Length: 422
Image 1 (cartoon, rainbow, N blue to C red):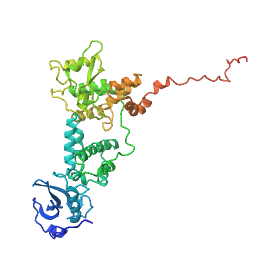
Image 2 (cartoon, one colour):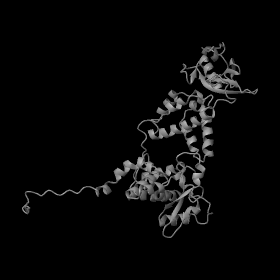
Image 3 (cartoon, one colour):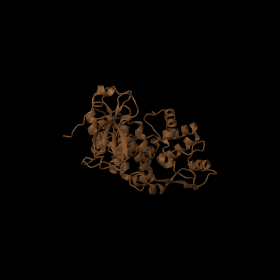
């Protein structure tokens, strides 16, 4: 059993509360060579602070938990003096007793920052590292990764059920888990608690089926018409979404020279989304594929792009400014107005419904599934997995043509029934 170090000024709640409130931590006991425990006295509960040598003549400090000044210890976020000693040693050392790294332990905040930089380097979406900050608690964001437990992560995940749909929670947990996994790879000597997020952030059951809303053709036309009435720039991007079924993130990367204004067969050279992981996202995003569009949409795009350089963005806001990499964040309030105007529920219908509707429309028009997958930059397997239920639901008229026609039974009471000779 590890030896506990005593300190009369810090080991009891009553002794700590006699200290003056100050920003600078009070020095505490030395726990091991190069490792000390300190205490910061706050107006509310104080915080435990570790001071550790970096092995090169300097020290780093890090707050890592609340003291049990006004509430009882829970062994995780609120720690007694003796529990803080154990936690401080874990922060400064790896499990096998070797000296820890010469840097301060990485917190969840730092893990998200590193994850964001990694996403940028791979030309992936940095929003996946920013989004979790909207939902993580201040305590979790400030906590060192190596002190996270499955229980507290699960409690946080389950606490989101009143705010977010289960499928959304699962996506959010995957983002947080990816950040923590990256942190563990970079500091594998100290971060050895992968089970914390593998168990605590496990996907909620029954939430794998995405909520894909399919709109009728009339509703799609009404959506686009109302979008134009609200704002020309929003109307044009909605029009392209409805015709091509592409993802919004693909549309904002279209250039003027991606419009192929053929008089009979106009099309867009659509940038690929680079979804599906891998380290070659940058290369994938440079690739383009052909998507047919209507002559009417081609004329609108040509007029909107008039006078702009070939390398300039094709789709812009009405004021001429470019769309963000995540345009949904900029037009979500307009989508809500449009959806309300066409008598649908904005809590259910999003702009992504235009993509879902495009895919199902193509399938119901008997376009081969391989072609549908190619035109929408996805896979046959993903279409079969995602849209099978909707195909069944919306293909009633088509499937009826394949029903077995049955012979009508003759009416024995009819006067004009003629018996056939055997």
